[in-house]
Image 1 (cartoon, rainbow, N blue to C red):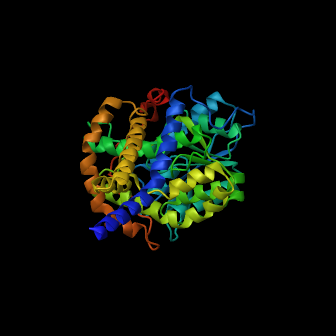
Image 2: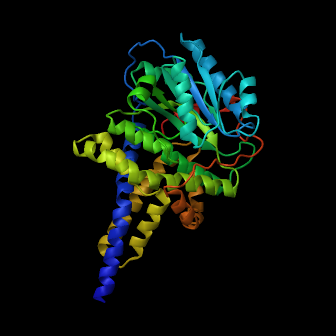
Image 3: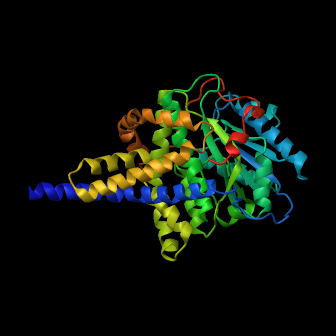
Length: 424
């Protein structure tokens, strides 16, 4: 019996060790998001300094995106036109990096009056971004806004980005969400996936910024100044390049501001296989980056850098679903201290989910989406082998398959902004 006790204690200790960073981080960001919701939205980048508007480049990495790239460019052009009407700044330049394309992506982008950078080289999204940054900076652009090729942006995006830059932000992240097809009623599983995405990319970014931490970079809708790129070169190479580069920014003493007022909306992966590919890439990439990014954050964390401490917790965290599985295992073990930890962690998870639910436009239906959580967890268990492969050093960036026709609105004014500007 004593051997069984020590085996159970060792297993519980391991589960606590691997899941604790995530739940500490979730407690911080959820508290920050709640604090932000209890007061008027604070412009995280600070007061306007009346700086002249930056010459802005929009860099869009694209690999075989001929079915969606025109919609994305039109969306950006509409936002840029509105920003130009309300503020005295020159029109932005849109750079589409046609990376290893075998379709008509480059031709469609040129037809939409974008500047095309053709790139035929190994590497995934990081290589395309470096090519886009190099071209934009050589053309004299003072800041770059990065968008995925399947995105639609709110009309006020360029205006909000320019305001953040004028306030002195050296890097910023816009609100980034996913949407299901608007011409059909979403399933509970689709709502749950969107809810999980909102927690990762809205609750965490907003909560960090509200507490004075760096908001983070989420791969789409983030802004970097030319000076930032010169001082912290974009050397990310993993399939989780956003987390890797954010760790480099924080380690250098820089912080990413949060832009709540504008949003970028991306495609929900349309098919079962596409969704599995996307989830395995995200979660495997996070695990891989933890091994490379966490060490560079240790020294500034020991020096007392608050942003570095939070960023360390973030990169050292398990994916949410895997951490929940670890906590459920603690709950199943006949150890009072392990069960106490499990109940505490589950309470934090509920707090975090509540902030994600009330950050969206329809909280009642989002609460119902949690009914799909058990099946969601079973699917994640089945994905563990693929996640492990994507966490390996030889894992390659894999494009998420798209449907032939766009599922988000072709006209950006069909996106509702006012719901997302309300307090959660």
